[in-house]
Image (cartoon, rainbow, N blue to C red; front, top):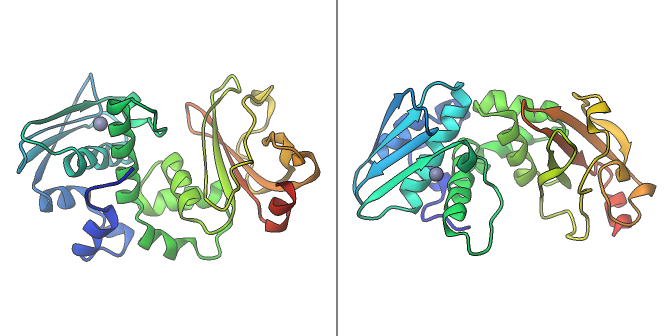
Length: 255
Ligand SMILES: [Zn+2]
């Protein structure tokens, strides 16, 4: 989905080129939005505004990386959904929406706000400096999460988007059902993850950068013949598998 202003452009206009300078309160102020924090029971963040000014309130009962994500999300509404009367109250479900759905106007606005937040917190022009020669593993996602003060899940999503190496991130519910996945454009459309992983809970978590047969995670034809590099992580709600086609020639053979 398109943004009315690119997060990277907003940061560059403010001279921000290092992760420690991504001060979201200051960025909000520069964009005409005042930020407050309060204990909120029914949402993670809300925004009330006109077309020129807004007040954003962020739930401060959660950890700082979630508060940052919520603030980035509300700024996404401020930049993209601004009109004479702007009111959004966004809960954890809204903040977890990453899949565009046909004819679901409201959900798609939440998806766009989430995409905006992820890019504001981890802009491409800064991420690239931190990604040089890094393996595509959960350890790298954790390293990025620490540098950019985000959750490991957000960092892993941006790792996939920004990396110039073929990789995929799959999110599984604890019963093994696939909830969502994302892959970068290097991965051909024909390559899909399984819809369900049997006995997911028996797989050791905190696998990092281990060679595995591709068909453990991938259902496409020929996956049983090739190897990928896998990482597995539990973010407290779901399981995340990060898959890296370290040897790109194997990816070509699979298609
Ligand atoms: Zn929202």
